[in-house]
Structures are given as C-alpha cells and as structure tokens.
Length: 115
Ligand SMILES: [Zn+2]
Image (cartoon, rainbow, N blue to C red; front, side, top):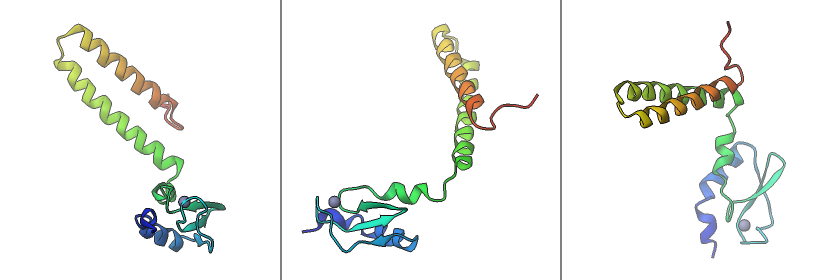
C-alpha cells in the first residue's frame, strides 16, 4: 500500500540521522511517513526530500564559488569558440553570451574585482 513512500525510506533514515523527527501520524494525503525537519513537516510519500539533504551543508559561499567556477569555465570555452568562429552572427551570439557571464560574475557576492 505504501508504494509511494518506499523510495523515500533511505532519505528519511538519512534525515533522521541529521536530526529529523519521525511523526507518529501518517500523511493525510497519501499515508506516507511524515517527518519534522528544521521546524517543518515533510512527507516522504509525495514530497521529494532529497533537496533537504542537499541544502544542508550548502552555504551561499559554496554556491557562489560553484557558480563562479561554472561561469569561468563557460567563458573559457566560449573564448576558444570565438577564436575559431568565422561566422559573424555566431560571433555576436558568443560575445553576448560572454557579456552575460561577465555580468553575472560581477553580480556575485564578492565577485567584483578589486582595482
Ligand atoms: Zn504524503
């Protein structure tokens, strides 16, 4: 009967280890196991709990660092593409793409280059 909740069982166990509480009452919507985590009630049956595990241990700094790295990689790739690109309209696309990347880099907290 609780087919929906099965996939969440492992996640529930992991969350419980991280301090989540199993609730006695099953989910009123699907009968799945409910947990309370960080002050909120979640259902392992019909809600995806995996973001809860991901979010923990993430900080803005980590995310910013990752975004910055991704943008830099992208810029590097685009720069190489641009070098070898003869098509003017594609050059334009690449340049505006790179401009967007630069823009985003500037907007990241701490992303501004010090003069
Ligand atoms: Zn549910």
